[in-house]
Image (tube, rainbow, N blue to C red; front, side, top):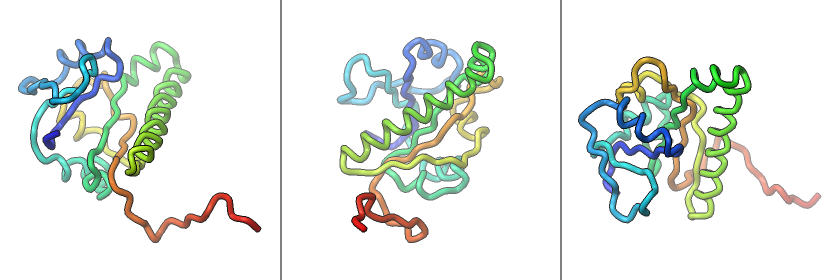
Length: 160
């Protein structure tokens, strides 16, 4: 797939609203070989690596991967609907998606990592999401794993 800014509408009922709320000028093209009914759209072709790193607190892992995901959610609506439990539910869902991405990346022979530090305003501006209805919930990057000497790891089944 060509490099660019893509949108995956995980909740199909949000697709119509997203088309209305996102900035005008997006292509909304269905990439080749994407299964019918899978709501993934190429919004804008281009190199967004430096923007992904900047939005992820300047972390190179966001720019150096095969792709970087930014998960948006309707935070205010979740809180209005469920109070503090709605807030927790939204973040629980983001964590669930992160875990699913970890497992799928590993099963595909690559790796994934959650990015806990990120800025909200820039990604919201890319998509033209104004008014506070949508908020950035989580960032995640997938690509080839690079060893990090700052992180200690060992065999989880080490025999004593």
